[in-house]
Image (cartoon, rainbow, N blue to C red; front, side, top):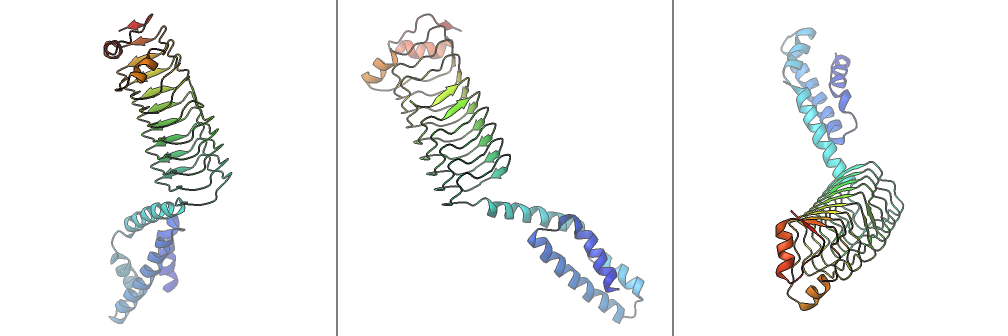
Length: 285
């Protein structure tokens, strides 16, 4: 009869093998069932009746096993994605799904995160030079003070991601969608931003001198206190954008910005005009 109990328990746990806590639960359950079966036999029950009563005594074990398995796999996955201060140069993370991964102060130079799903990850102060994030979906990630030189974010989708004070020389954002992304206090002069959409992006106190934003779309974007000399917004769309600072140097630089052919809402236009910056050849809507 022990073989029959073993076979029953094996059948219940078969879809969930591999998770450590499920294996432990299986061993404990089998021991309890064997003890219950012995007690029922000692009470005079025949084997068939004792077996049925033993199985009935455990309730909906399949639901319990499923819940334990799901929790176990989540916890084990969290353990696997803790890579603080690790040497992971040229690692292949393409297509992975990572939630709350810890990569802080790690060497990730040349690694591949293309088409990955990254949520809540921390890359603060890491070496991410030459990394590939093409096609990745990144949300609630922290890249502050990281070195991302020459990294690629082609067709990436970035949401609530913080690049403040990071090294972005040679980084390419092409055909990327940036939503609520922060570039505060960041030198972006060597950053390539091609055919991107900017929604809720914060460029405050950053160095944007000489950047080409021609044809890009900006909604609720902040350029406050940024270095703006020589920027071009030719043919761009600007909605609810903020250009504010308290220094004459800022407004002098703002007058060098080329808005030729840009479309902007009345509030953005009024904001610029109030600082004695009146863009010519723009469409105000």
